[in-house]
Image 1 (spheres, rainbow, N blue to C red):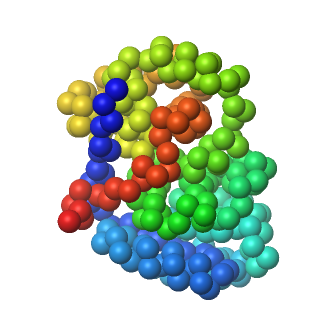
Image 2 (cartoon, rainbow, N blue to C red):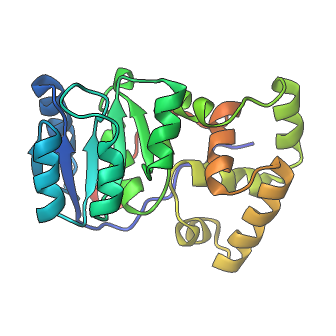
Length: 234
């Protein structure tokens, strides 16, 4: 199967908050976000108290947060869900299965690992702002039990048509229905029909589990998040 390039979301200004206790890591994150013209870094905090102030003053933002640090605590994710409408991207060194599951259950739309570096962070923020799920490879593996062997994954993938495979890859890169339709030159309703058939063939419940399956099977990797919105590419 040819490897199509990801579709590019329309340019839009995205307000971003950074909540990170480690000042060095916070600086790296801010530098990465500032390099992307469509991202607007509004504010930062280094702990739970600062996060609470931002919840009151900036209710509609994407937040890059590491909740698994002494000054934070994972319960802050539930506070966020109850207090404001942030789109949460966890950026952490913690790969624990229970932490990944707790973060997603608390409403996090993204989970990236610091060991992967900050190079994929800006694209992940843009994707989360569009309402998509972004998962590091190990985070994806933590969310679902692995299928019974590579032969099972291969069998399920072989059930997909080439068009369904392309759509699965685009979904995994954070593309919306309309973006996929534009790239493949088909209607939104046709994309939705393909997605419905794909979910049935992969024996998964929804798009999030389909994305998890794509990571588990090696169809996509967090390394593929090296793109930026088309309007801001050199």
